[in-house]
Every structure is written in C-alpha cells, then in structure tokens.
Amino acid sequence: MIRNVHTRHIPNAGHLVDRITELWPSPPWPALVLDRPLGRGATGGHAFIRYRCTSYVPGQRIEFTFDPSIGLIGAHTFEAVPGGLRHTIVGSTRGWARLTWPLAIRHLHDALVEDLLDNAARAAGHPPLHPNRWSPWVRLLRALAKRKV
Image 1: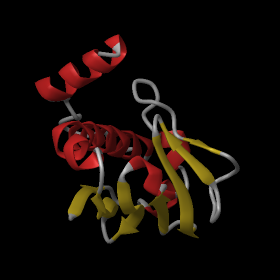
Image 2: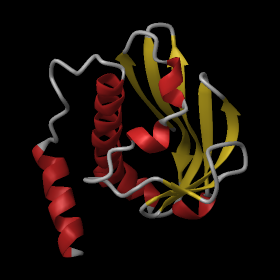
Image 3: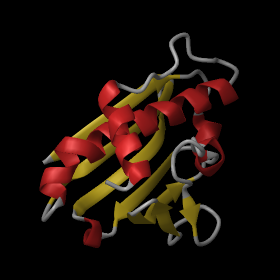
C-alpha cells in the first residue's frame, strides 16, 4: 500500500489549486499535459504517468486517478487544507511498479512535488526559506534517464 503525503504551509492557498498546470515545475520536469482545460474528465499526465481527473472542486481539490496500465492503482490529490496545500497519493502497485515505485518513482515524485510546492509558495508571495534540493539519488536517476540507460 502506498500513502505518500506532502504538505506545505502557504497562507490563503486555495486559489493555487486551480493553477496546478501553471505552477508545474516544467522544466526541469516533464510537463503536465491535459487533453482539455482542468476539470472532471480531463486526461493526460506527465512523462509515462497517465491519469484522468475524476474530481475537481475549484479552489479546493483536484483528484486524478491513475491509468492502471502504468502499474499504479489509486489516485493522487492536490488540495487546499487549513493553512496550506497538500498533495497525497493513495494506492497500490502491481507488476514492474512494485519494484520501480520504491527504487525510483517515489524519489522522483517526492522531488517533483516539493518543486511544485516551492513554485506555489513563490506564486503566493511566500518564497520558501529552504527551497527543495534534489538528493544525490534523484540527481543520479535523472542523469540515467537522460542517457536512457
């Protein structure tokens, strides 16, 4: 079972939920691309991670359900919470994802989400005191991916 949560204190952050595609840290990460404007039914993803928007409450919450073909079964949400923003993944893995989630995807995901939350904090006028820094493992994984090893 996966339960992965990232929360950032950002005052009055509700309006940032609706700006997820604008705040997405691309570059350096693969762009978040949806087939239509953000809303229920929009499909897309980033890199090979595919999902569909299954719930959208403007200014409050977005939920994306993973396409099961990627080996992640479940959903991730981006939501305004009292005093900030939270990103949560709840689900499970199957197939190759049982190996790739703990070894690589989780680490890359964590770095991407922290970069996204840094962007959200900047957009709200509260730049992070300690911006996210990628771990040596994340830097190595990204270098290997560029080489397509």
